[in-house]
Image (cartoon, rainbow, N blue to C red; front, side, top):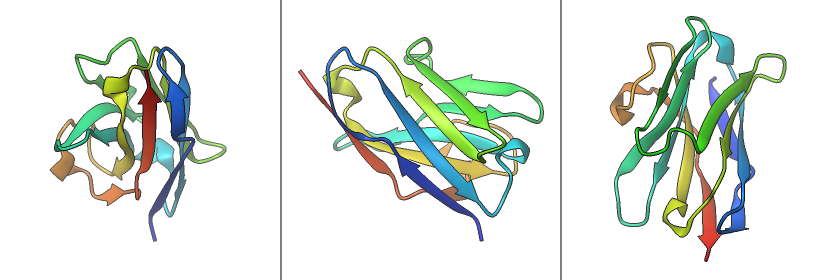
Length: 123
């Protein structure tokens, strides 16, 4: 059974940094496209970043490239999202997702999802 469990969220001050973790089980992160999405208050879920180790492909939302870095650790079977320069507009629920297919910014193309974790950025 595939499971994804996010951690590392919480309250952070504007300008700060955060590293979200996603512990995966039931599959190897090196074999799947793994991504991070977020849902801003009152908005639809949107893609933040995606990484597929098997072919080295990466995707970052245009507006976020430079502040967000996705990575994975095969030994820990985990995926991470480093976020720098946080601002209140980054307040959202963040979700880890995985799919055996290619990286995509489309929510519907990811088969497996974590429960999400809240990040609140105070000004």
